[in-house]
Length: 293
Length: 335
Ligand SMILES: Nc1ncnc2c1ncn2[C@@H]1O[C@H](COP(=O)(O)OP(=O)(O)OP(=O)(O)O)[C@@H](O)[C@H]1O
Ligand SMILES: [Mg+2]
Image (cartoon, rainbow over all chains, first blue to last red):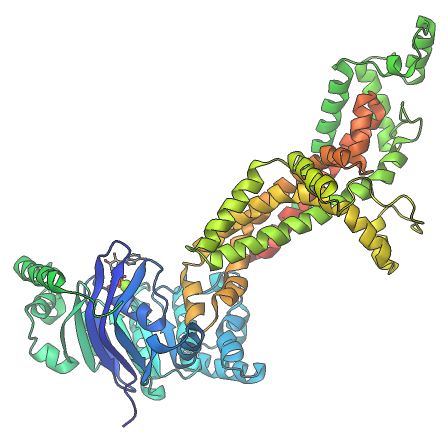
C-alpha cells in the first residue's frame, strides 16, 4: 500500500477581512481514486483545489492545517520545491476551457511546455507523448490542433486539449474543477465519459469538484459534502446515495430532481436545514482559534 | 483585401501630411514677425525690402505661394533656407539622423526601464517593492522632460560633473563618418571609443526624454500585467510548475503589452516633440535645435521643411505601431 495520494488535515483559510472560507477541512484521496467534492456555489470547493495546487488568490490566507502530497508536507517545503513538486505530481483540469488557454500561444507549445521545461523531456519525446494523448481524447487531426490558436477551436475541443495536457505528464493527482459546467449539455456527457475513461486507464487519482450530484454518482468512489467551507459529511459514494446521514446532504439530494421525482421542478435546499447549519457554523466560528499562524 | 487596406492607409497618410502642410504654411505666414526685416540691416530702403520679398516669392498671395511651394515639394525641392541660404532638404537630412538616434536611444531606455519596473512591480505585487515603483513612476511622470533636462544638468553637469552636457560629440575628436548616423556608424566601424563618447553626450538628454515615458510604461504595463496574472491560463501555468517570473515573461507579457504598445506609439511622437527643447538645453545638434533657430529667424521654408519631416515621422510611427499590434494579436492576424 503506497502513501495516501493527497491528505488534507484541518485546513482553515481566511479572507483579508478575517472571514473564514475554509473551516478545518480534512479529506484524503487514495492513489487511483476519484474523490468528489460537492456543494453549492460559494461552498469553497474551488478554494480547496487552489490551496492544494498552491494557487490561492493573494486575498486568501491559510491559517491552519497541513496538506500532504504523497506524504510530503507542502507547507514545510520552500516555495520553489513546492512549485516543482506540484508541477511534477499534479495537474489541473480547469472549469472554463475558453479562458484556460493562452490566446496568443499555439496549442502545441502550451501542451508540451511543462514536459519540456519542468520535467526536462526532449522536444521529440514530449511531442510524441502529446500526440498519443490527443489520440486518447479522440482528436483526429492532431497536426491542425497543435498548430491552432485557442480561438480556432470549439469549447469541447479545447477541453479535450486541456484534459490531454493534464494526463500527459502522468500526474499522481488531478484536480478537476467543474470540468464540464462551461460546456454544452451534449458535450458535457462526452467529456465526463472521457475523463472517467482516462482516469481508469492511467490510474490517476482525481479530486473532482462539482455541484452536480448526478456527476458525483457517475464518476466518484468517495465523496465529501461541503457547506460554507466545512465538510459536513463524507462517505463512499454508493453509501452516501443509499443512506445520506447529514440533514444537509439529504436536503441537497431532495433539491436535485433526478434522485427523487425526475419531473419535479428544482427545489431550493430546505430553509430549516440551512438555518440549523448556519447556527452550527456560527457557534463553531466563535469557539475557533487557529492552532498556529 | 490586405492590399486594399494598405492603399487606404497610404491615402490617409498623404491626406494627413497635406493637412499639416497647409496649416503650418498658413500659420507661420499670418503669425507676427517678418523674415525679410530680420535679414536686413537697419536702414534698408523699401526698395531693398521689396526686392528681397520678390526673391523669396513672399510678394505673392498665400495661396499662390503654397502651390509654388507644393509643386517644388513634389519634385523634391523644399526651397532655400532664408537664414542659412542653403537647400532646406539638405539641411534637414543633415540634422535628422542626430535627432533620430537620440529619440531611439531614449525610447529604448524608456522601454527597458519602464518594462523592468512593470515586470518587477507585477511580480512583487502588494509588497513594498510595488509601492516603491509606484512612487518612483509617479515622481518621474509629474516632471516634464525639459525640467528633467535641467535637473540632470544641475546634478551631473554642475554638481558632480561626470557626463558631458553640451553637444553631440567631443569637438576635438577626428570623425571618420560618412553618414550623419554617428552612433550607428561608430558601432559598424567598431570604433567603440567614438561610440562611448557619443553615448556620454547623448545619455543625459536621452534620460530626460525617457523618464516620463518610462514612468507611463511602468504604470500601464504593470496594471495590465496584474490583470492578466489573475486569468485562468496564468493559474494553469503556475500549476504546471513555472515560477512567477517565467509566468510573467512567457504567458502574461505578450497579452498585457497591447494597450501599452498603442500608448507608447502615441507617446513616442510626444517624445520626438520633446527633442526640440531638450536638444536646445543640451546644445545637441539635431533637427529640434535647428527648428528653434528657424522659428527665431522666421525662416519660413526651413520651418515648413522641418515640420513636414516631423509629421512624416509621426505617421510612420503610427503605421509601425499598427503593424506591430496586428503581429502581436493572432485574432487580428487571421481575422
Ligand atoms: N479571489 C477571491 N478573493 C476573496 N474571496 C473569494 C475569492 N474567490 C472566492 N472567494 C470567496 O470564497 C468563498 C468560496 O469560493 P469558491 O470559489 O471556492 O466556491 P465554489 O464552491 O468553488 O463555488 P462555485 O460552485 O460557484 O464555483 C466564497 O464565499 C467566495 O465569495
Ligand atoms: Mg468553484
